[in-house]
Length: 96
Image (cartoon, rainbow, N blue to C red; front, side, top):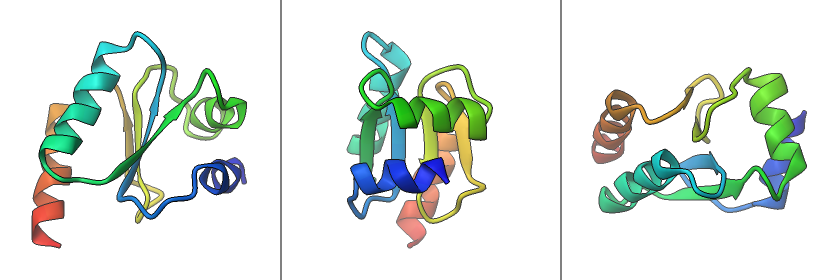
């Protein structure tokens, strides 16, 4: 599975993986939000990691950055700046 390859390349025990690209304001806002809430994440630049781009497009079906994947739940992922999902992630993080 492509995701496993990507995770091996970026191996770190973080709560989320944020797939980003350069000059992406919504990518920066997503990472800033996670940082402000103390939520750990790994940022993966899809322009530098071809397997990551293949994963988010071919396997997840997304064409917009950022793509956020919950590392604890393969079914929990989204694309774009989703304030509702960010708040949900922060609430889950507090409860943990």
